[in-house]
Amino acid sequence: MSAACLVRLARCSGPHLGRSGLLHMAPVPLTSQQDSHPQFTISRRHIYIPTGRQYSNTRFDPDSSGRPTTWDSFGIWDNRIDEPILLPSSIRYGKPIPKVSLSKVGCASLIGQRKENEDRYQLSQMTDDILYFAVFDGHGGPEAADFCEKYMEKFIKDLVKEESNLEIVLKKAFLEVDKALVKHLHFSPNVPGVNPGTTSTVALLRDGIELVVGSVGDSRAMLCRKGKAVKLTVDHTPERKDEKERIKRSGGFITWNSLGQPNVNGRLAMTRSIGDFDLKNTGVIAEPETKRISLHHVHDSFLALTTDGINFIMNSQEICNVINQCHDPKEAAQRISDQALQYGSEDNSTIIVVPFGAWGKHESSDSNFSFSRSFVSSGRWA
Image (tube, one colour):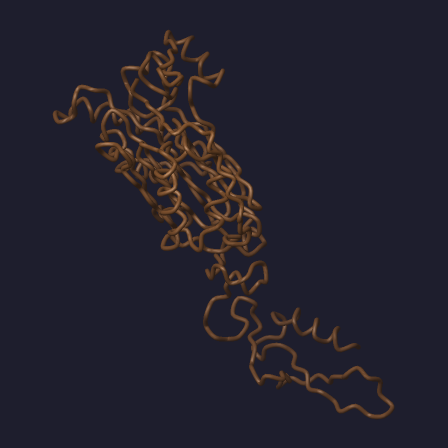
């Protein structure tokens, strides 16, 4: 039996050898009659390792150091990120899945040229196996965004106890938050007469691999895969034929402001939102569009959630390219928000950057920023 076969046998038979561990091999000196390949004999006690280091029979702790195997130990990427794998998820899905640590997530929110920052964002370990990320872009005051920041996670957390389909969970949660908000505003004496509303883009990551996104309004979610931007949301604006038809069927109308932007009933630049209760009977709804995607950590670098202070100045691939030039997600979030202001955004600018397995793998030197873009941020209030 060749040396390669014996090594393969030793590596694969560990679990069947009981407490004594792997089969161990000791070298036999070559004789003049033997060929040039080293031969081995089998012993039950010792393994010959040139470094003298003892190795465990488990691939999750190969050097018996007590430290969990990192994603890099599997040779799938280099040491750009050093996170332990999620062992239960890796066993369940049959492939190593890295842990996404909230401490590595980058977040930034700038007020821009507005008098008040009505953007809100949130991230948390919602359950043992689900991470929660959300951005809310308020308008007509911060009340709706504040309410979503405070209660959206709670509604979702309650729903996942009874429903495993995360797309259904998000749809129910958005609608329930919308109903709860109208009651809150009705009984809150401090809220001004203007009808507040907010966009809502929420991402749930279960087991480190199942990504589900729900969104209303024009805040966005984007995945970077193999260095390319993959849009996970589509803006809800009157420019969409299906959205415009729903507004018209409900008795609403579309007008265009001085910047050429379409608005529902001359007021709102989006066709779906949480809040804006004066427009609910004209087709503005709170039901989100959802998308489910399985992550491939070998190819997927990050998830980015952004509000329109960024989206109306930089397109998805531009955002992807800038983030791919950054050392870590925190730097990336700050650079994107700063870049939006430098390009002329006057709106609040908020971004969350969630790193995945291929973070840093697709470094980009491409900065093809289109200077023909409009340097005016969106105006929801005509």
